[in-house]
Length: 640
View (cartoon, rainbow, N blue to C red):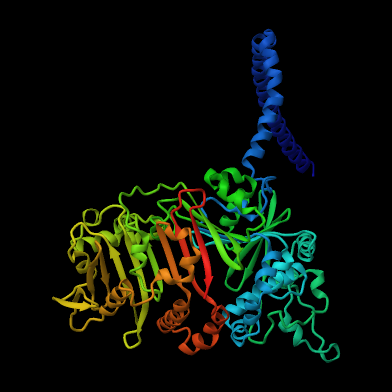
């Protein structure tokens, strides 16, 4: 036992000596470290005292650096942190449209629009028609119903599609962008039923989701078998307490057996706002309420751009273009009902509307009613007017255009040279057009810059679309009027691959026709008062000759041409024959249905065409452009 105790004592002593040695070394190292640290600190403190404290100016600067650093840090935080708000200058959604918008349309006062349009006899005929009922039951109608249902859930209101305008009570606008996204901005009336319920629902932060379909099929409480309580599903977790209340059934709510809604809302932090993201069947919709403005978009990036425009309209919105000042000032006059804006800088409209707007960067239409007819004053920005010498009278061109053409675009100072220049440089939205135009001209051996004089008269006429059912192909039937320095048929041979020319005559006017076996077109060409008229068929050539000789009504005989006075003498014109358009819409839609296989001719005839019947009274839509004043042009919707 004694030996065991001696051995244990030695082992404990050894462990004690080891711990003692370890601690002594540890404290020695810590001491050396502290000595080194404080030595350096005192050395630096001594240097600081000699360099800063001993110099009064340096000492004051050092003291002031603390609040300045804090102020700069705070300022930097607020500068780089997104802070969205509604700028005090904003009067409607027009101020919140991003500067790169391709298209924007706004109804300035929804209550006025409802009184003049929705409650009109025309819309009442549409609403009570069988075609409208079939539309509501179609896929497009279901999409409209889904939107209505979403608004119903968010506002806790039972509404009809017509109630949209009344509920908002202020302006409502729609914008589209070249990336395919869209945005909607609504200036809500916070005193309206919608405004109050929308505010209440946004405070709740979630959509009160309800599965109406399941609620309808719910068994009586007594008949239900006892079931164990399961954990809440993802969808159930997003249901408000209000969703547990009994569901009101209403025929306006999409809840049929063959349709089921599926909304899921999440909040996304963006600067000082929480943006709601709603996942529907076909993607996501983002929306947020800022003051009395409701912003909605299918793209978070687009929504953010709209919010930035609302925060700083003078730099981020359409208002940033100072030439838009006139549009904004005119828009808020009492007689204006709405506005349409078309951007022409690298958009889908650029190659087609840039020439006729005289290279303007945008076109704005301010809609109003005059003599119970819808009209619009047209404004452009950054226009570069064409310089013309000895222009041809616009009457000379109009007198050669039959009144029954579907579409006519004509000018006494805008030639094909300007159109080809635009087609060759259409911007990123039409890259394919920019690539194909030089190839088309090269294959036809057509040097358009030499062949067509600058700022010469021209006319582009679409007579009708001809649908060849056996080929499942749509042939445009057209005529082109132009001036050429060559006066030959090179342009005709660039478009077509014709056979040998044959001489023909109609009403004592000689022309040439080029017929080739097995082709649909029989192109023809004749000259009248220095203008070459190239038609895709012999029939078109004869109709134009008959119009020129007074044997056929011309565009000058339309009521719209008479109503546009003094705009009748404007240099540029676009005329749409509404009566012909109604007929040809059927052809277009049937062709689209056969090509896509999504609908048939019966669908178009029964469900779509009747919706146009209430507009039988409309004769034409006439747009006259090229004025030198603030108002660049005029659009008139005329009756028969």
